[in-house]
Length: 360
Image (cartoon, rainbow, N blue to C red; front, side):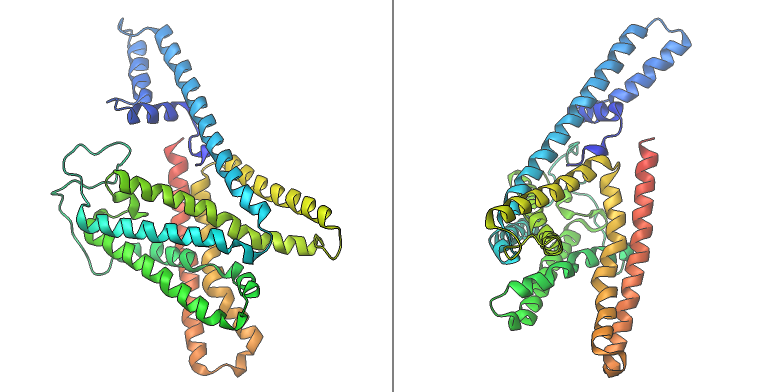
């Protein structure tokens, strides 16, 4: 949850009213009342308008506090395994739970997409705006050129786990098996994305959104899928941040070789708590956090996933010692990485600009 997505009290109150089933959002009512006051109509009472405005501000502030509360709760849940699990090998247990949650989500998405993907009757609920009514015309195209930039950025994000690969390999009992492990991981990830993408586009066609879970009609199974996605994210954060913590602990010599076991535990707990608190503080402080992270992700994932590995490979093995066909593959991957980074950054900047204009 991002409390900074709700920058004004009036828009927050309007969202609450709309979700409650009211026909006219509260901010529209304020505009109508203001117009009546300006025209001198006796139907409008300025005192009543002030009361509505104060009520909207109070409701908006309350809603903002609720969002911050849930952000704190999620951060606390992530903090527990983050300080308990010291090495990357110890995160295998929670990683398995994250993997199983992903498997269940994919199964739910595919089954619903092929069995009961549409709402039987209208109207479309306010909390499920991307649902598709039964009887809606669905069209498919072989290539949607306008969606290629977003697809490239998504591909880069899906496979950009390079930052933690060395730590995973180093924690393995038999590191020589790493090539097979990474190959299996890539195959599984590709299969998951292909299943969700194919099933979602088959069911919803031009109405498919990202993530396609938003297209699923609300029900017990789709809500369960949403909850599992949240659990997956909460589990993934400690795994990803463990590599950063391990690198900092090594630099700061927070290790048994340099301090007592108790002091090491206390120091490591303080360091990791500060890291997670900084992460929560940034997410609360930055306005339009979701759009900002999309922009940052577009700038970084293409570089981390496609550009840097090729450059490091050439540096490690020597540019002249690499076969010519590997150079061709490397150049193609570099071109794709630059394209994904540029186009993804462009789309991220447009999304951020639109969000700012929408709320101003």
